[in-house]
Image 1 (tube, rainbow, N blue to C red):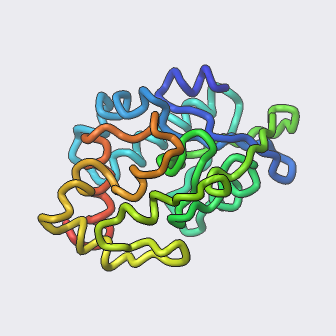
Image 2: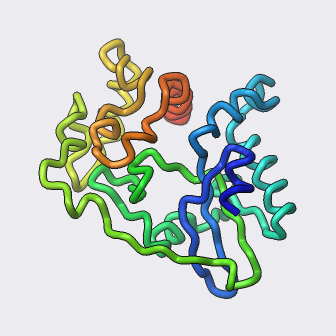
Length: 208
């Protein structure tokens, strides 16, 4: 499954048993951003190009592997990706609030999932939450506007900063708090990808 996923720009973030199904949660692989930027969806000027690319690629992958493709967008109703992540043994809420993966750190994002009817498809892996071994919490100290307290996230302060001239570093290279996390440094996105996601973040908040 991982080899098939890698072939289309994806990677298996985790697997888990869910009722009568086996689930594989999918994210972008190291080559995934390049695969997306070379796709028709990236250049056609339509809305939500990454979501549309994900639907096309993961649906085809599911058909190839005999699995149902599921997505974290397109609702309501929405699939319970965060519950699945928590049950997978490889992802937990981070000190910043968003999920943290044992390998990808806070740079993981769900592009979709594959549901297999056969339970013997799943191999569950359980690791430990990286934040539990972090004493210095650099992520909580890196935000220029202290948007993260460890207990809450000041969305308005974050959005205002990212949209401002002073927020160019976050806007063009990705969230400085996330970049400060020592987990998943190999998965920190290149500037083009970071800018794409930050642009989508601002548009969702009516700031772009």
